[in-house]
Length: 268
Ligand SMILES: [Zn+2]
Ligand SMILES: [Zn+2]
Image (cartoon, rainbow, N blue to C red; front, side, top):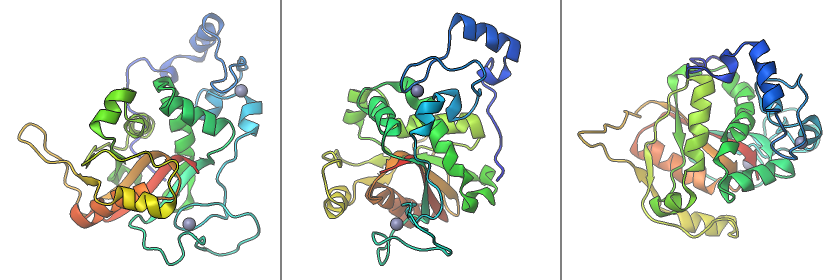
């Protein structure tokens, strides 16, 4: 896999010498973002282990093969060739495939909950590190990601006002910082929808029909050309894939994007 590389953001943690990082650790000791116990000084500076202690890491469930070729739902048991899960088999999905870092339970579920509903924006770096694990998917590893675009799932204006931020956009920005892949907020929500959490798959699809559209270009803000582009659609969690499907539909049918791959921190 190749991508443009980290964005130079001035004095970042990566640019500080190890000596200075150790001094900073003494003054501001790092602690686990899940259980709040102190992190060991030898804890890595990058990736999820820079944010979570080993016992919390041990409680995470990374998405590992074999998994559904379309939605990434892991399957326990030996599987020697590509397969579709019962949810995806026979279902027309607009995105090409979905990759996720971890299963959405245990500490990962708590972190996402705290990020979204606890409005703790500082967790975006932790969840972006979880999301980045999805880039290790073999189908992306063989790709030159510098030609791709990171696109967030849009939030309705009123809901974003209430939360203070759009979690997908924040994850996009963090992923852009570590990979250099350009971001483009090209989608908008045309109306507010009731929360998806308690709805079944069919209800979710009904609830979301026609809810996404392309942002318009204005003389002062031109939207990038998406025709023939490859897009990584970024979100925090993938559950039924209904949201991702609706977004991908607009990106492919209206904007004529060539490919849409969904990347999320967790898989519900
Ligand atoms: Zn911990
Ligand atoms: Zn599936």
